Each structure stands twice: as C-alpha cells, then as structure tokens.
Amino acid sequence: MIKDFGTGFGLLLQGFRIVLGNRSMLLRGALPVLLTSALMFTGLTVLAVNLVGIVTWATPFADDWAQTWQQGVRIAAGLVTVVAAVAVAVVLFAGLTLAIGGPFYESIAEEVEDTVLGGVPEAETIGWARAAWIGLRDTVRLVLRALVWAILLFAMGFIPVIGQTVVPVLAVAIGAWLLAVELTAIPFIRRGRDLKTRRATLKSGRAMTLGFSVPVYLVCLIPFAAVVVFPAAMAAGTILAHRLLARSSR
Image (cartoon, rainbow, N blue to C red; front, side):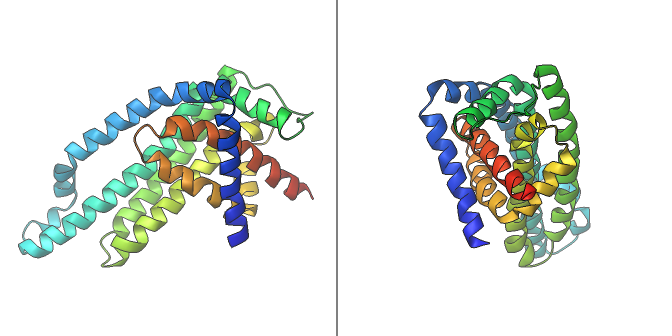
C-alpha cells in the first residue's frame, strides 16, 4: 500500500515534468482553471464572511448553553463546515473546469497518450459538446456524493476529539478520491468506459489513486495554485488511468 501510494505521487511528479517542459500544454490547461478558480474563490470568500451567521443558524440548540460550551460547539461546527464546504467546492471546481475546458484537456490527454504511452488505437474523439454533457452529468453525481459526505462529516464534527482530528483527515481523503474520479474522466471516456467502470478501476488501485490525488487536492486549496497543478494532474491522471486499466486487463 505504501509503495503504491508513493507510485501515485511519482505519477503526479511525472505530470509536472511533462507540462513544465511543454509550455503549450501548460497554457492550454491553465486557461479554463483561471475562470473556475475565480468563481470558487469568490464563493468561498462569501462563505467565510457569513460563516458566523451560518454556524449560529445551524446550532440553535446551543443558544441557552454556558458560553464556554456554546463557543466550543460552534467553533467545532465552523471548522467542519469549512472543511466540508471546501471538499464539495474542490469537486465542483474540477467538474466545471473539465466541462468548460473539455477540448483543451482532451488534447492534453491525447498528447500524453501519444507521446508517453505509445498511443491508444481504440480511442474515441469526444468533442466539446459531448465532453461538456458527460462532464456536467458526472459532476452532478459526484457533487451529490460529496454533499452526502459533507452532511455526515458535519454531524461527526460534534463528537469531541474525533470531530477535530479524524474528520478533517477523512474529509481530505474523500475529497481527494472524488477529485481523482474527475481528473481521470477523459482517458476513460476516450476508451468508451463509463463512470461506474472508472470508479471500479480506480478502486482496484486505491492507494496509488490517493497517492496521486491527495497532493493535488491539498495544493488546490491554495488560491490559484490550480493554474499550474491542474494541467499536471490531467497529464498524471491520464497515465494513472492507463496503468490501472492495463493492470485490470491483466
């Protein structure tokens, strides 16, 4: 498991080497990110400004508690709210970016497959309209899953100690997993594989998938860092999908 996790991280580094050595690829991958990064940053800023009011509204049962207990519960609720909101936002960010920049990311995946992986003879041409439709459809499914987890994590956030230690780690793992499902969409679609197959294939190499996606998820939390990391993640996700599909077929 540790070896596979390290392999996944190594694939991400390989993705960085590919795009940093190819300015055209880096530019293609960065353009859609700029738009969605601005949208997500604005949304999270609005959440931060209204966080106190949201937490107070969500915890009316603590209104009559002693101040110490009231503040403790509401600080915990605020922390979990932010963690859950970020998890959902990153998945939504990835889906919107792929939907908006479908042709750009398809060209990156195709170039990586042709120059690094030796080509994919059975690959399909997706096209912007189809890529946008599939991307939006899968994004809705994944965001709904993220929302379910966000509700569960919010409830767990009220458990002493666990809510402040285990929950943030679990949120990162879940968010990173859903992000990996998004980032590997194009190579799977080019091979005619659906979302169910994609999830099953990634699950067969869970440690490798998380080794790739956890660093991407954490870097995406830095405002506008995704401008560089997202093209690299797309290249790395293409290689990851190729490797896991090959292992699955064997």
